[in-house]
Image (tube, rainbow, N blue to C red; front, side, top):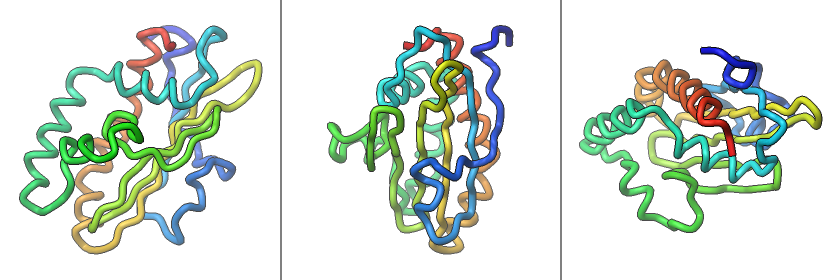
Length: 169
């Protein structure tokens, strides 16, 4: 991968992002950052929509596999999620809050709740930071998280890299 705007790095969960203290305890917390070029939008929702529309082809395929595997356990599939409140969703994620420079997405389910923040930070040298926090409710949630956590990190990095390669919006 070449170019200053394509390097995605893992960073500590920002303490001042909207998801940092959303749960009393977390089972997963991570954040990834990528530089934004000067011409890129400052609008977090616009950038979030762009990220999810420029993912590598293997991510939707992986999501379909996930849906097929979890449906038998009574967990929500992406198709079920997309049918709920379509105006209040980015991709299949529910919108929980938005400001011009940060949007909080996520979902609550019987096994776990999660939130992700897509946030623009800085003024001159701006960065986009995608932060995720997960709170598990039970053994199913903890087991599920253990299985998907490595994929989650790959998906987040690849999604940010895909948007960077496409040139941002």
